[in-house]
Image 1 (cartoon, rainbow, N blue to C red):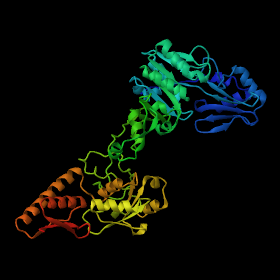
Image 2 (image 1 turned 60 degrees about the horizontal axis):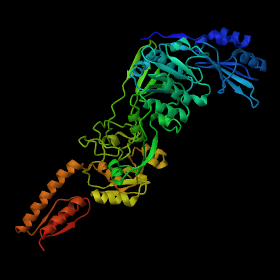
Image 3 (image 1 turned 60 degrees about the vertical axis):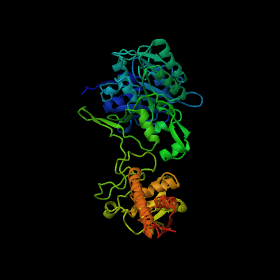
Image 4 (image 1 turned 180 degrees about the vertical axis):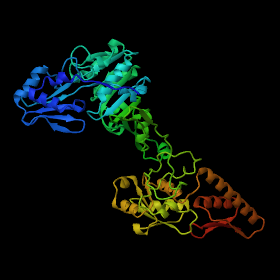
Length: 549
């Protein structure tokens, strides 16, 4: 456990405020919770705390108040930010059309020692690390202490665009330790200073705050490719947000549309056009700051992005700090294929997310691997629905309500597999509902009603016969490839015995019921032996009879 120490130089910030506002802040005696002081022309001054925003004095802010603060600060940069020398405070201005300052946000800058312990092992591994979080959650504070810790044994250069990391003035704040600091004249030149730091100062680690432009993302990739460790921050709540951000998605590899070959699309069970990661991520590890004392860690950004694009997101590692300062780490679970409808743990109703058919299939040795579509069993389902799934041995056909699914393709798939299926037009008559992913995600009324009634819902990725065959294979518990091979071999032996019996004098021999594929093979074998064969009966009891001409 690391003892936390806070240095805020609050007196330096309060001294630039008008006297009555300064006194009001001091009287409240809540400096440890103070985040910002807000001064807007024509409005009452307020202070933002960690839990609330309070009015400081019951009078409006005047032009003289704004001017008093501006004169105590000096010039604002092009990004409308100013600071106080040798402190970490940041003052941001709001200007009118004429360029006059009409509003101020005075943010308290604190050097908090002891916060980096929650991710210290990650930054000391030597991998590039990106920190995500909403404004004000403490990204820059973590970044500053990371620079100080790494500078004890490495050559660290900070690219400080707004002087938030190293403070205002030419001499860096003591909070950055031995790290060197390069200031940026204008925010638009940050990417140039990043490259300059690598080319001129031979750093082992570069620390960057607020990567927000495409040129900066490209510069970060160039630095990472030169073998320099990067520690940076960006605005965003999660990996998913960053992936959808066209400007910053390159930090985690970027995404592009890829057209697969027919063979590859069939192997994956997806459409021919899919999204894939474009290149290796710039950052190896990503940390999402959820609260000041809880973080989600993606230790392998490449794997996390790939899994996200395939609709199988990997759970991150969760790290928390309790009130006593102890760090607790909840390891990310190993990514495994979740069992489908035939799970053995059917002790009662339970809610599970549907798995789209054909994304990735687990090894065939697993009992559940042959079910590429998973049933969504609603919480409101009666216990009998969860504990008595449809059995393959049941004689009567299964009534299926195809919502958004082609009826004729479903019938063709059922015929090819030799399973008894009756498509119905009303959901109330159905045993199960099958729909497409697009309809399920939109929470169509028919889907919601089926869930409320406890009806099993199956979700397909595409409206194709192959997808429907996979669905029916799972529904009727049909054998997988290994079992099919053994079953086919056994039925072929039975067919050969029947042929031999007919050739040896038997008038005719009737074979057991079989699927259309097996019956076709049986007809071929009979034809090769110069015998006659015909199919009799109706599905699923249709069978082949072999006899002489």
